[in-house]
Amino acid sequence: MHIKSRAMGSYQTNCYIVETPQGEIIIDPGMGATQWVLDSVRKPIAILNTHGHFDHVWSDAELQKRLDIPVYCPKDDIFMLEKDPFSQGTVPCKADFAVEPESTIDIAGTKILFRHFPGHTPGTSVIEMGGLWFSGDFLFKRSIGRWDFPYSSAEAMRKSLEKAMKIGGDYKILPGHGPATTLKSERRFIPYWIEEVGR
Image (cartoon, rainbow, N blue to C red; front, side, top):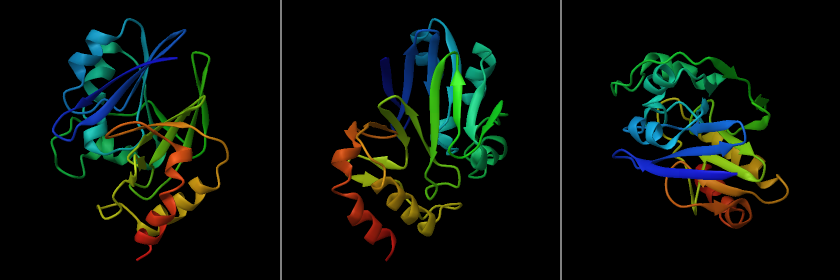
């Protein structure tokens, strides 16, 4: 599975293009992502969002229209696509599929699990494909997403971190910001963050 990535906009949000046998899956097309995506795909088949924050969904609407492909978003964050709750000027987008927590979806033969880890936002999810975790703003290298924004929840974040600690095996983590890491590596730091969130 070949993956292209580029950090987009002033928040340097990682946009990913996953090449599958049937075509490309675009993950979190943020601010300024449209032209790079258009230049980088040959047969795009879907747009996936890890969560609804504007810096991850900014280019959803334009790419949805220009490429004529569906948008999949965690159910509990769809209001952020439709309403621009932070008044950032995000073009409203109607998600084609509201993904239920812990749902496995099939896109052109590729099985994709949306692991639900709320806290940063109500719908924050890790998009799992094989041994890869596209973690959005849940887990970063040596850090985690903020839990003090509107619609965030410290209690939900703590429970999500505890849940992540119980998941067996290892996964390569491709986060929404910054460099890649692994779940095995981050397990050393998650207990610290559980304590911090609980303060």
